[in-house]
Length: 110
Length: 122
Image (cartoon, chains in turn green, cyan):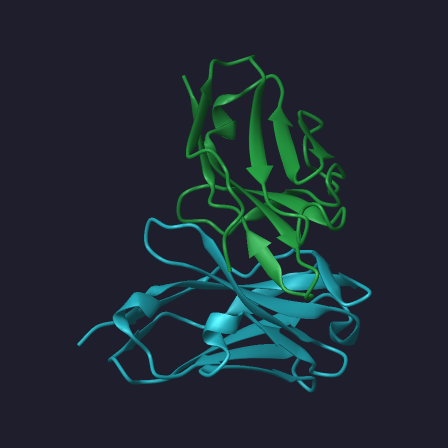
């Protein structure tokens, strides 16, 4: 199955806001509000930062926010910090009870 | 606290099988599931499948249907992922993650194992 489409890289200066898009189809992102975002630092396991489009697990910074419109979901990181430099992946449930991840976006803090 | 502890790194030859374990603790195993995700070197995350901790129902990514087996042992709250007929492109880090379901949709993946490197080489 095809991965959700994300930009390969996004960069920003400390304190700025950046947005990462995640584009799917009406069989995944467009079907339900079961969209999640993960942050992954090198050599580490992914960390859940948003679920159900815009909900933050306990302990996740309020600088991370999410939204969805049609078949595209977005992750915004506000007040960019050096520690935000990482890979970010979106994911979504599909109509078939399967799951799909995005292609991944590398965030660079300039 | 919730923990998922995976078994150690494996080195295999093409055609071999590998079984990776994911021992869970800190929560009621039967009301969640376990998803398996892999990541080839320098690549993105790839969904492989999930298994229910309640009734062992499974969903597999179609590309793995004929060589992937997911099981659980409720006496030890452990999930297992076995991949057969290994190829060099199966070289990857394999992760397990706890699944929170909504109507059998694998909705939330909040807790992850540390990952297990499986290397396949002749």
